[in-house]
Amino acid sequence: MARPEKVDAVNELSENFSNSTATVVTEYRGLTMGQLKELRRNLGEGATYRVAKNTLVRRATEQAGVEGIDDLIQGPTALTFIKGEPVEAAKTLRDFAKDHKALEIKGGYMDGGPISADEVERIADLDSREVTLGKLAGALKAKMNQAAVMFAAPASQVARMTEDLKSKKEE
Image (cartoon, rainbow, N blue to C red):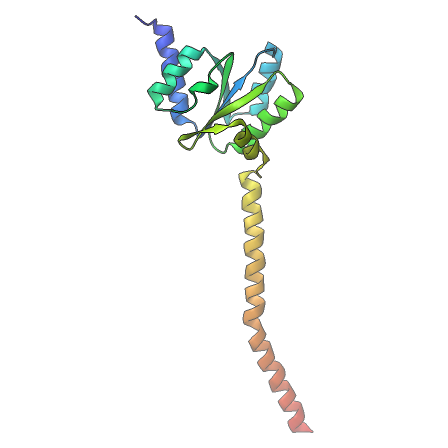
């Protein structure tokens, strides 16, 4: 019979899997408690870094319907549950792993399927949502200005032609 603490831990992990837009699996062997605390602080409010026992994680993935990451759950495992846009959390994990070689990004789970460590790196290379929206807004504004100039061109041509005709008539 399962102990209530373990059942609660599995339920919590399963809920985190279900409510997250992405989950990144890491190995933290060799990191100190201070470094883990620093990583959690750097991740901010949109992500939760959780160390968990592999058996509990496997049960939680089974309960949440998460498939394809069982091979990632080996050795000392920690999970980053990301709510919202995964880009910032992926950048934070990548940068922290560069500074602290003990942190290894193994892969993760996003959009109903497993992702590799390389895919986590590519997500980290993306612009944030705000930057992408800003670029889109700038491009749309430029096209709207271009359209306004094009629509105004015939009217100004007619005005110039009228002015030319008027000056020729006066001659």
